[in-house]
Image (cartoon, rainbow over all chains, first blue to last red; front, side, top):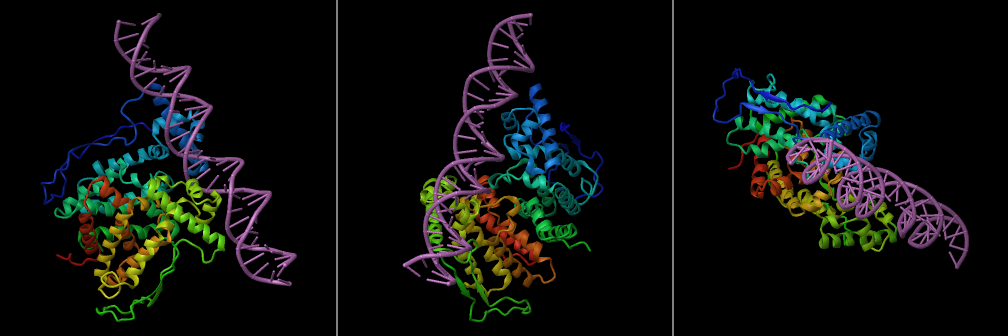
Length: 229
Length: 229
DNA sequence: CTTTTAAACGGACCTCGGTCCGGATCGTAA
DNA sequence: TTACGATCCGGACCGAGGTCCGTTTAAAAG
């Protein structure tokens, strides 16, 4: 159901666009790993984990994210409450596990997929495509993304977010070798925060096209490149 | 204790730097209002409100923000639990009320204080000063700022944050009349998010000087102005 | 000063996230 | 097959945020 451990071999084909800064090491073999589960589980544990994820997904479909109560999930999966917490840590852990599959797909796309998201396109173009992809993916799963947001002190520590930000940083380093790409990548990622997307689209009524244009403009400004007409 | 309703009359003195874009209307009389309380309270209500804020502040000083339990605050203020919730809505409301005084001071500074924060300096300079001021103020009250962060769906709706963002937007409009300053201001504000500051300084170990430099650089990129050496 | 009413009060009560520990179960090694 | 230890299970339990509603009280009207 939600198993999978993608292993993605990056384009054996050479990138068509030779890059000026070749020195930046970009690993050639990248593994897309799950962000949530530990390496190996006992048979019953694995079975219960699957049952819990399935139950949670069903509850979301029926009653929305708000209906996903730890006790309800446990009951729906015919499992004790403690089991849910042992497996997923806390509520956000469970919700993030539900997002894991989509997160892995996205990561596979920009790590090893076709351009402009994947390698092969020039970094600025990849950056643009990345933002747009994340934007629409978050918009699709907005409720779940919002509910899965951990408390402020852990918001940036989460590994799935880190992976996205690292990718942005790698791209930025190719474009701006002398800038503080660590900070700039945080800024760019902040624009893609589901909470912000939610605010702008649902509370301010902005259409997604405007957010998309805003991303393209932001990338142009941050990278000091001319904005594409 | 935490009363006050600042009324700030903006510089009767003319700004020393004449601005090219004079058309943008910047109000001359601005009132700095509290973000939390309703206009008028009954005597007992006002008294209890003060007692609650004092009790909360004392609890923070003694046991840290984590020790600020609604029941504990109510008990320390010798007041019923329901009273706390009726006055402040929820826990974050109470914590934000504690931050209100500092928020008003900041607002007064950038609305009517001396340059470069207040009116009189060129917009870009004011923007730089604004970010630095917010940065250090948030760093001082980090724990409280983090705890006062509402759930994701309300994070951007809060009026104190809106006021700061609006100011950034006004400045941006003076610098970039043709840009989507609404979105750009969101991006800039995101850099000043207490949760991000917390992550970068405490979890990544960055010094504040780096964050400060990052802000200056970001402003330069976003406004497409040369970075000040 | 009395009446009246809208507002405030207080604490019992509910829900839900999270913890804990005695007992059951799995996997392995003998 | 049996024995054993590590892992997992389950649900009672706890704390804290938030709600509700009968009672009290400030303060305006008569």
